[in-house]
Image 1: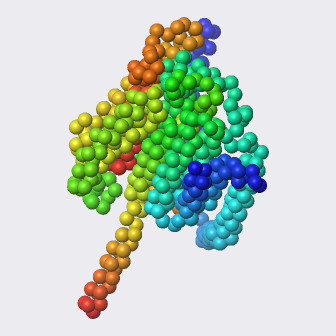
Image 2 (image 1 turned 180 degrees about the vertical axis):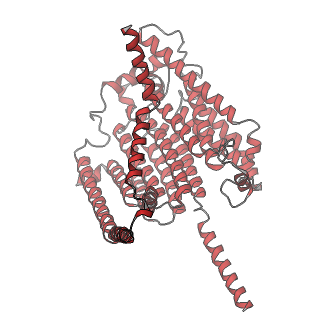
Image 3 (image 1 turned 60 degrees about the vertical axis):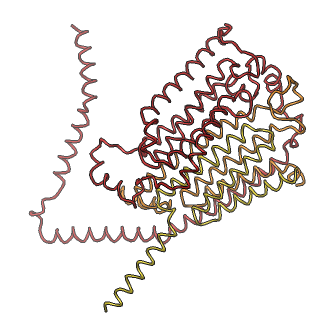
Length: 101
Length: 332
Length: 123
């Protein structure tokens, strides 16, 4: 039983370090969501079911949702697709110019 | 005669201070001085004009040199010092806290100083005095209800500030034709139209009633099993958010508009405050409260805790939905 | 040193707090700072709830009329953490709203660039 708790705590620490180190914002929000969920299970091993329900509903639900919405507002969710689209447009524009000339 | 004079002087002085007469006078004097000091360009000789130009060029050079020094020397140095200090503070804090953990009592020790007569009183007399089977709910809504009032006001303040910052004002002059057309543009971030995703809609048809039912259950059984107002409210809010994401704001507005939000939150907060006032009044004056505690284990028990749970549940559900709607669309 | 490994829950909570704190200080992106603050909050709540746990006892919900002090864990830290979780989500929502408005104004989330732009505006 305690080995499970130790593994979960180790997972939490690894998640926290991963959030600090990642450069992509979307990845760090998803990792934060996983962190919140595992934290909710750790509360249950501490014999506090109230805290587990609240943390699951609020941390893995509402806070992560608000972070995703904020990412959408700063145009960072489609960041990779936008870069690809602009690159493709530039290439197509370059080819067109090449053909004209 | 003297009294009348004094009174008029006092009122006159206050009126003068309110209409900022002194400030206006000072500003006039400063403007007149500046005008007198500014040289008349036509009256200057060419030598003076040259000297004035050289002075200006010298000033520009000094400013450029300072800007260079800022960009190239001062800023990188400041950044390096900041990073070094940060790392130093973090390492110091980690060392201090880990040392503190070594002097703490062992984990799970019954003789921890935190297990004193306060928790003993809550556990032994909790059921008789509050009527709640869940000791934690009885504690936060009966023994320590003042903390919960503070927490509800923090939630309310956060909701108000988010509304201030992100809400679109339809009546203002800035919400012009341009902004309205931007709403129809698919690339703008306030564009919202339900994409009518089949998978999402079918899943939401099944899940939303279950989630809302779970939320209502958790709120109503807050004093009998784990849960309470906050968790149940957050679950209800999540159900509402799922509905809005799947079916669109137009369908949501059939039963939940801004007016509904205002009225529900107002009534819930007032009921909470009045219930707590009643409890404070009867407790402070050592009067027995007339609200029956009921049999422990039934839903209709524990006096006012059920009412408080329902109020808190409504407030939290509406607040979570308000956060989502204001972030997503800018209006409720 | 061994005590740190025996008391692993509290050590883990302290380490999480420090990781969150470091993230908040060292990154220049505003969203990373906000996520760091959330990690810090969760670490503190874990530490608080650890103080209330007693080995061999169950959650504080009265069962079968047993109202012995020896049968349940300490309910007081759980109440404190419940309040703290709600305050944490409120503060996160407020900070995210401020971040969105800052982005509309300066079109960047980097703190250094924002300060430079703001400084030029005042002059």
